[in-house]
Length: 275
Image (cartoon, rainbow, N blue to C red; front, side):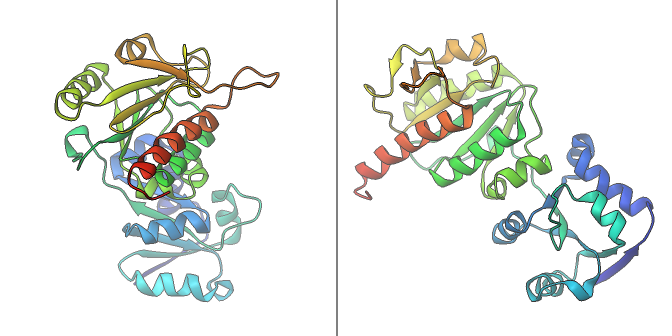
């Protein structure tokens, strides 16, 4: 066990802070900062490699936290002064521990589909809460992979991890920088798996009331402010909307996306006799 005590903003503290604040540093190190007990528990369940376990005052830790430390003897165990620890925490109610964990970035060619792929494509997400929420829904409703398109927020931003309740560690998430790369993937999936590409928009000309969605499918969610790009719209076999009757004419993207994902999941379970 490598136990370290930190009482000043030394090099180790600056590394931890950079993993929290800087996406470039996270990408270079393939490490992410995790705050929140549920997110840490999900990292454990996903068998992530813990590189650091961070706390302030070991005497105040619960048996659960002590057991985590004892099971991760290869990790750096960092006892930090309260003021430094407080500065690392975003939540008003401090978690008893923080952590950093190793990640393994995925590429399109790493993905293997068994049958009838179910893929979610999110176009340039710009809100950490929305991305984390839809990752959580995707994990709940059996999505095989999530593609994040273009210049977007970091999928491993601590706020995304926290709002996903750690679902990010159980999900196959692939950043897609090139539309051409996505177009090639869709062409292959259409040839091999007969996949449908379904866009979503509040002004879509097909209502979810009148169209049943099934796997194999790639569901596209647009950017929160701008919707789907022109290039993505051109790839769609149809653009579908959720019918609503309130005064407001659209839903939050994570809410609308969860409705679509549930519809696909429900139909899949019904076909398998699971519902």
